[in-house]
Structures are given as C-alpha cells and as structure tokens.
Image (cartoon, rainbow, N blue to C red):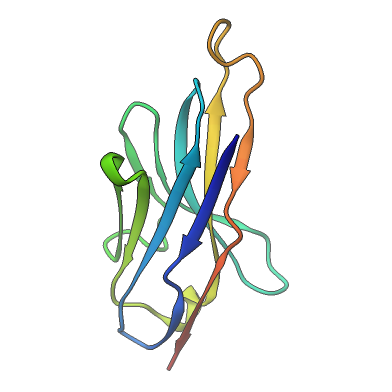
Length: 123
C-alpha cells in the first residue's frame, strides 16, 4: 500500500553536505509520522530525526544543529539536509513511516521502511 524510496547518499569529506530524499507513494488513511534512522556496521540502528503526525520536529542530540528535516507534501517527499558532516555520521540512512492506530481510520497500523541510502564521510 505504501512504498518509500530513499536516495541522495554518497561520499563526502569531513564538513561536507548531502541532502537525502524519501519519496512516498501509495495510499494510507492513517495519521503517521516520518523519520530518519541510520545504522553503521556492527551497531544498532539509531534514531536521527522525526516529523510527528502533529507537525512536530525532533532530532537526535548527535545531529542537532547540523541536520534539518523537512517535508514537501505536494511532492510527497521527506528530506534530510545534512550539513557539516562528520566521519561518525557514516552509516546507511533509512526513511521510516509509522502509521498511528485509530479505531476507525487505522485499525492495522504498519511501519514502512525505505531501502536505505549509504552516506560515507571521510576525514
């Protein structure tokens, strides 16, 4: 019903910038939040940022002040602008859509993940 396609990763040097995109297709009757996660080899997947269903924005402490998440509803796209990238930001980045339960409109909430896009930051 829903597909997420994330892209925009690449290789940059310390201090560089990248802009990730997550294009959403399909349909849902649910309210939902949209988030970015990342996972480095051998480590747990960690939260990066989230756009709440109420429009709220939250960021992990590690990326505050450097990353900015935004939404373009007309293009059905979630973005993550990453500035001043550091080697510790190197990871596979994943877009996530989380549907929120509602008795009438969302009785079977689901979680959808993009396929991931690799970000590599070299010193």
